Length: 106
Image 1 (cartoon, rainbow, N blue to C red):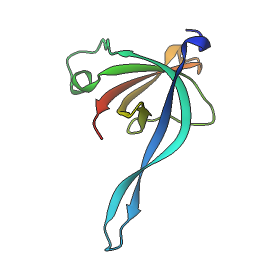
Image 2: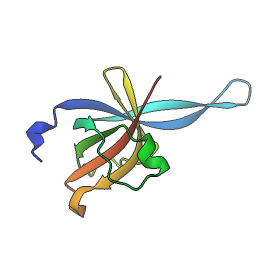
Image 3: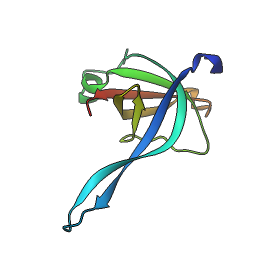
Image 4: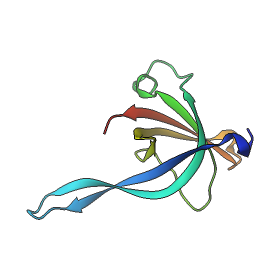
């Protein structure tokens, strides 16, 4: 993997709950960072499971020490939303991360 191949910008977002005027709360997405990556259709090599059925794409990003990418966060790109279902540290070297994502609609 080369850094030059990570050409697609993604807004990394985390969900939080915001208190409403009438005592309830509602989800709100906040942008944390812009990460650069490479996206392709998923070729998940998992046994038939709920995760493998939901994953639509793989996104490769460079590992960053200043942010912690976690499942449940999402990526935005060109008005498309991708929910992060799994985060893998490739070769456990803290250099590259593979994100298994599910395409969602707004």
